[in-house]
Image 1 (spheres, rainbow, N blue to C red):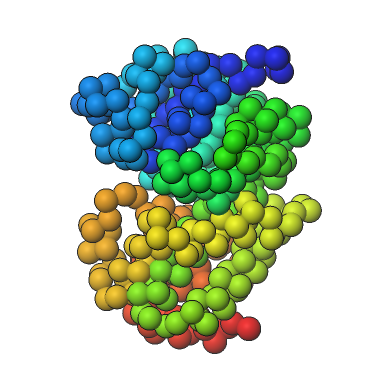
Image 2 (cartoon, rainbow, N blue to C red):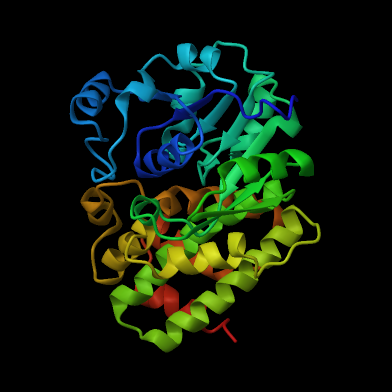
Length: 334
């Protein structure tokens, strides 16, 4: 990799709030980007209005600096670095349309989910299916709500890559006045933590909806970070500090923030909504709904003690009563 030209021309791939926030960050560093969106009507509205018509509508863009396209292979061919920001349930639908050779591209996952059906991490899927080199795969995560990026509030990211120098390069590139970026080599741990924190945010939302109280919420989160640590140590053993912002920090902001769609989804269930009704009410994807099943399936192999995951899974997929499932879960807490 030529460090002097990295990351080269970047393509943002996805049209949601997180994609929009990351596009804003990148355009503070790059003269132009390519932006893949699935819907041509959404692209037309974006060009006409000068902002994303559906997400973070207060963020204005210089449209002359953006090459929009709904042709994923055009985007893949043009870019040096592909920034994947699709919701995980739909990721495979998009990725499987790629016929361009992307094996020498830099691929950055900001998906915060697992590939459905195969239960693979996004980076592993890109390596296996498209021949992307492992040290050219990156992951972005951290306690960084898209809405707060839009408001220019201090935001914190972690960039993971198995090549420490490349993680450092990309961290330096993304860093700005209000964007603080930390490099890491814990790619698998970051990806799994990004999925788990969404599951635990649903649990925190359920507790909020049931009005169980702040004391129990605090105990839930403290047990959740220990549960996350047990899982990560089992599936990806290595030295890591679970209190780092990319693990604990991301869990806290997703578990408590009013911007957290997973928390809001869980809160509806805690208030008595059926899972189906809560999903229909949500305007955006609650990634934790899908993540709960993926992690539960994965854990059938590893057998990690995960009472919070099991409680959320039983509520979402087995029709368990939230109060009853959480009473049983609470018996395991300390």
